[in-house]
Amino acid sequence: MVALKKKGLQTLMFSEPPIITSWASMVGPKEGEGPWANDFDMILEDYLFGEESWEKAESKILRETIKLVLSKQGLEPQDAEVMLAGDLLNQIISSSYAAREINIPFLGLYGACSTMAESLLVGSILVDGGYFERVVTATSSHHYTAERQFRFPTEQGVQKVPSSQWTATAAGALLIQKDGLGPKVVCATVGKVVDMGQTDAANMGGAMAPAAVDTIKIHFQDTGRTPDYYDFIVTGDLGSVGMTLAGELFQKEGIVPTPNYSDCGVLLYDGLQGVDSGGSGCGCSGCMLAGPLLKKIKKKEINRLLFVATGALMSPTSTFQGESIPGIAHAVAIENS
Amino acid sequence: MTAESEERLKTAQQEEYHHLVNRVKPKPPVIKNCLWAFVVGGLICVIGQLILNYLLMLGINKVDASSLDSIIMVFLGALFTGLGVYDDLGQKAGAGSIVPITGFANAIVASAMEFKREGYIFGVGARIFSIAGPTLVFGFVASVLIGLVKLWIIH
Image (tube, rainbow over all chains, first blue to last red; front, side):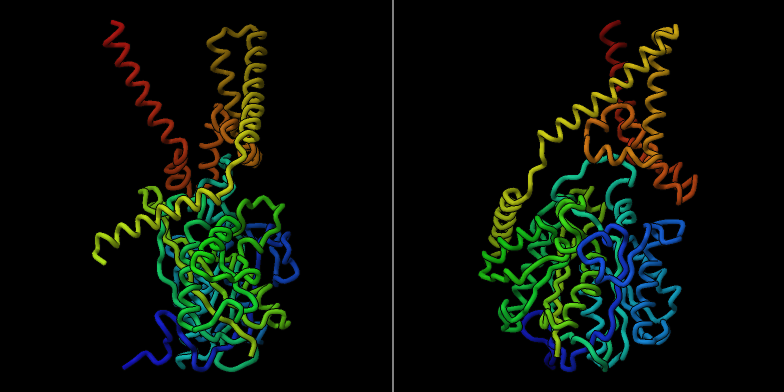
């Protein structure tokens, strides 16, 4: 028995491409000051969102974004058949607690900052496979929950280095359906874990860039497509340092996706916001996809998008034990029909 | 390829990539950072000195005045951490605001504030020294060693 919907080594071709019928994004105050303020559905006034802790706030952001994505289609939360979500916190509590409130079947995912692509990929498999008709995929991150878990207490006076990135306070959610109107998820490439021995937790873009390039390379090999097939190729959160590195690696591999290549971490903020190398976090690529990018697809400014969310799969424990940072990237091709 | 040569190829690739990263990675603005550290660190010390002089002027003896001065500086470090200013200062000044005793206060108060939401026992109590802990531990170790040196060599 051969895998009928697999092409090449790692790419899944959907026979009945699932449709992204609705999308929603919610961002924090800082992201709201960036260049995409008009493209997000909601900009929070503060980081607590009426909650007692940042963790509760993050979970609420995710929960409200999921409710919003469904309400845009006139649906109630329980109308979604399954929810696929993940975030950065230990034991993905933001997602689990959001799922507790929403009370629909839930599959928790962890792919660090690649979660938006991972959830979209798995959700599309479930819809294309005929298991579910309406799947919600979502992800979130919060600057201060990530900061205290991965780095220092937030009021600690430490100096950041220019290669460090700013974890976005943001959530993105997509509704994937078998029938409906909207852009289609045509194919997806499941990424490998790539570790080039980088140990600098203040340079995550550098750790993830080889994984992004590997997945994109395999995607083109598997599908037989070339970079100019896509109007836009966007990686998740490499930041400006990681994006430059990816550019060098692309040239080495003989792939030149510029000038239609960019990175959500570079796009999310404008240069004056003090974010050093750029944005990061699950919400970074999550809100960019479920906001500006899908909006551009709807307006037909982009007709074929390759969305490659990237994740750094380390933990503070592995960092302290001197382990290098493994990177991962999953690619999802979204096209207007 | 044998496992060994595969391993060697991987190491070579990692090394090559490491060089690429070092070439691309932006360098921190060392001179600017040093100037900030010098000015801010210096100012903190000047404030400490002014307070000390004032205390001496009040007629407090030198030992007590030094202790009082430290207490006041720790209080100021804690206060400005609580007001949410010290982390912004640290972003600019780096070591200039970490090394003085106010930086020590910042490390402790920032941890206490951060973990208050996990309660007073497992939050504040357990994690208040999560950043300053190493300073204390190795400070104690150093003091014991110096004590031993004094005991064995000087006597």
